[in-house]
Image 1 (cartoon, rainbow, N blue to C red):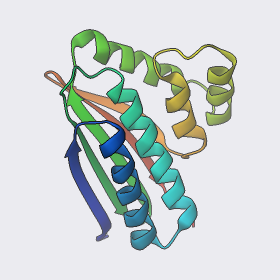
Image 2 (tube, rainbow, N blue to C red):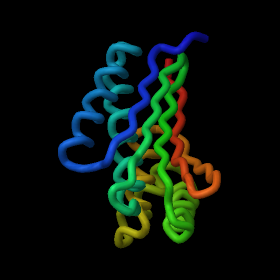
Image 3 (cartoon, rainbow, N blue to C red):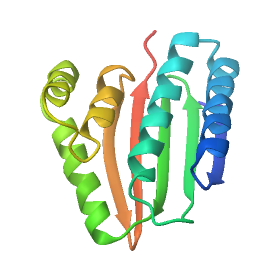
Length: 151
């Protein structure tokens, strides 16, 4: 199937950059799918992935965000160079957020103190209705969220 929209942007996360990127994601999702609920889910997913990765960056590191909207799904990938300890921390948080059903993971994360970004990642699974994974190549870590658009 042909893509309904692709957005690729690289930026230094901060107050002046992250919000406009979120708006661009939302606008592309609305235009590409005509589905406001999906657009909101994709925007939340992007925001949580950027925040999870951004907390561990050494300034002035940049984040690369790639969004693809394809019928019947959406895929979001954020990546950056990270030290090993930070990458391992994110891997642990993804494993924890992937435990159980999305609502169980979200409830578990809410019940405990914020640990390694687990709440934001569990929110992606529950509210964003996305699956989570990581990919590591050298110093670059990619956080990936993927979902199938409901009919």
